[in-house]
Amino acid sequence: MKSDSLVIIPTYNEKENIERIIRKVFSLKQAFNILIVEDNSPDGTASIVKKLMEEFSGRLFILERKGKLGLGTAYIAGFKWGLEHEYEYLFEMDADFSHNPEDLMRLYEAVSKPENDAAIGSRYITGVNVVNWPMGRVLMSYYASAYVRMVTGLKIMDTTAGFMCWSKRLLENIDFNRIKFVGYAFQIEMKYTAVKLGFNIVEVPIIFTDRTEGTSKMNKSIFREAIFGVIDLRLRSLLGKIKPVKSI
Image (tube, helix red, strand yellow):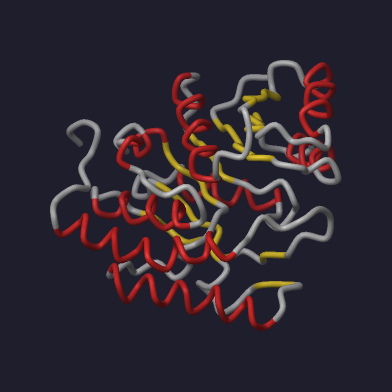
């Protein structure tokens, strides 16, 4: 089915969720295509996707990689694939239903407005909208975003959000070779780079619900990368190293 929108879903050991999330996205009134970026899951996630590709021919695609290469590189691989296939809107979304697929349309509507170049599914733009997280993790996430704003000067409330819609016009101007981070700091780096290049990012309020199936991929090294990465981002900006891949 012809669609101008591609939902990119990175996966590693998501057999409990992958079929349900794919079917849910395809049940929406808006026509979205899906690209699964699969990091050689030993649990058979890829096999489930390939079987579903027979049912959803022309709408469901898979990009298989050799192993766990990081969230950032997964999304960059997905962005490059989506741009090569001329999608106008490219989405980031988790496989575990922490991001409600129903909100894809709201992100789409936000970015389809000419004044906006990207949209964030924001947990913090209207307070704290997180379900099933322990209080310690809620506070860590919320104050991590506050820390990012303090260091970088970003006005974005949810700087670490991973539920996004990017316009083709924005992504075509990101030099992916300059994106350094592979964990959750990738989310900060992409937003910071976009803003520094003059693009407008809008926040759309969502309710984030922690996964009920499968295992979280968060770990201490990912958190450390985010904490120290923002200092590196600020320094790179001061040194004039954040540049578009082509003139805007």
